[in-house]
Image 1 (cartoon, rainbow, N blue to C red):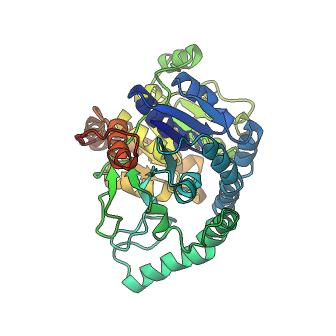
Image 2 (image 1 turned 60 degrees about the horizontal axis):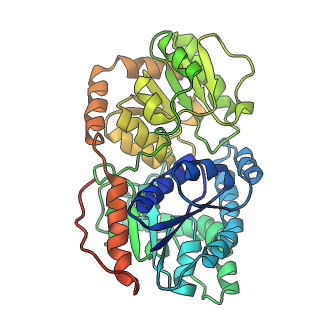
Image 3 (image 1 turned 135 degrees about the vertical axis):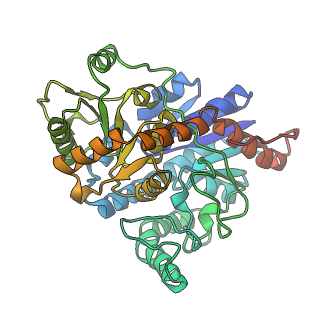
Length: 430
């Protein structure tokens, strides 16, 4: 069977789909992967055929134009990019459809697979990487520093979701999607984040139920597979210079603003100040060196990239933005976390990790050297927090999320394929 997988965004958005593609290819399926050419090496290392969409320059430009000091503008810029590249994904995937022998897999906000389901009848799986995509009134995701919660009056919660859809999601996502749908002869849709986003043939959440308990007002057919925890670490070990730095002294602190920003100058400057004030060694992680000071103190280094599965267990603490990929890798590593959420799913992920008792949060407006130094000293000295980190890490020691996700996708989509022989698949927990 041919499996067309599309992904867009940062490392945390794309690598989980590489993991799914690798698993499906190992099961004998013909996998084709569609993404920005920046990710070609990752697909190549996984032995997955790759179709480039857009350019590396466009990828880097996007993240240089999404300032973390203006999260709403950044989100709008990302939405604009996704709308512009959706037709290219749709056309490229449509050209590779084998009628009666093809399924598609896509992410929450990349709509080409859903469109192929409507125009060509291709069975489709949508994979949600984080629980913030669910508009629940019973347990609302935290989408801003101060947002509705389970205790908010019901009319307030319903009004908040309506406001979010009407004045933010619909202009930036629904309107451009409807314009492209019109060129395909498809009818208009409304409030896509309310229900349409979950109406694929199979919907998988790549996170465990202990991280986000399913609510009665979530779609009933969602399968939670667990964290994928794929970061290319098998192919890319720590560089000799990074390994030598780690071994040269006390465990350092890792600092990452995520791979989707090139404008986090304030974050890295404040992080350097925190290390100097508290006497910590530090590793600054960013693929965009222009946001790192040209001259660094002797106990602080900059690294373009390091696989988290190898690096994080060696750290005293990990400071990051709260992206789901960074968050889940830190949970597996059992390392204390300081989260500085800026936008997207980050506030919600931070809240869930704090409820687990393994992290603290500092919002961007309060992120300065003195505050961060004090919080890091508290985190590192808290033995009970470190024990909770180890307990959570044990939950992820034998995670098989990719297997569970692929089992679920094949169990639901293969039976829709006239050319496939359906086999009974036993799902195992992740």
